[in-house]
Image (cartoon, rainbow, N blue to C red; front, side, top):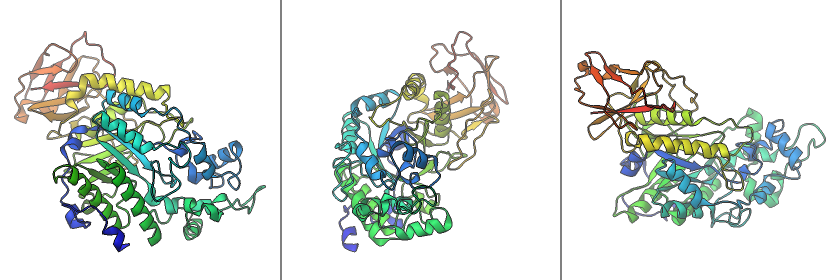
Length: 486
């Protein structure tokens, strides 16, 4: 393995914690605030939700029954057969990227490989890839070309590191019924390069009832992960790389991060412009890049850049999913940006590559709102406090829920000497009372405007509050509205 690690791009970063903690977040990411993610691959084929490739081998799971009844029992028809059904026949990345830009996305991320061990690019080290089989298309390459032609920073997500343990149930068999004791197709040696030589991980999971090692201890697997992710970076030179977990595999993972940053520095006059995100909340870890909080947010302003990743529904297309409303997405964006974060939003694609009507509606509504309120989102920084009011979400991963906002709830951003105050609910009495901006704050308010409304607003600054009179003729959308305060 040592000889492979020596092949990484040389540059300002070495594959050590000390060196990588010198990371400085590039300006484009700090200013972007909103990105779109295409979490898309063969697991979208059944249109039956996330972790499909794992759960069809977990007896009793809804996806197990669905798969058996629709495609056949997993001892006969397994995930290896599903990947061949993915054709992406209507995939039009140019059209989709245009939609995402219209909705306000300032960067785009494509899933390169999920836990299902299927590479969405022309992989040099893995035959199970989208050019060899399934769509017979370089999905990552097509996304990269479309995004970069339109000036968007391009990123990739890798969920591969956990695959070795995640796919372990494919080594099992039914414990009852007509196929009792018949091995699933993951036991077939002809497909071991896809389902992994992970018998030990299967035995551990069977014993404990859950995944024991998110990242396997297999040295052989570590090497394979390194070669494939390095190949991904070498072919596409991404501006952004996401790992679904902490930094994988110690020095091997650090070597990949150094390779990402040094590759970027090579192309940008010696200055790294790439971002690496991972989910370990230890400051000694996340300082090498950007902390990612899955399906959650920070509770307060953080002293370092961070990102929420979430989805309007499930990660992979699911006919059962209930989507977030446009209002919920916009409220999340405002709350996240007020605390110094970015929102990376997944829009689930159908297996043919298209979006459904609900997703198109969500994007269109975000686009309309952004047209009015973009000034208060992009290139802003947190104010001295993120907001005021009674409504607060719980910080941390997997804590997102729909919040019931009141007219007393505000979220703040600032830019170029202006304070932007989002009122999270339109007040029935047409008054906004902002306690943080009274005269006692030491701030003298000279002018107040409502974004999207031409005239200046009447206001009164008392010792303990700024009171703003809202225009009666303004037609509220129900989404957060924003005051620009000078």
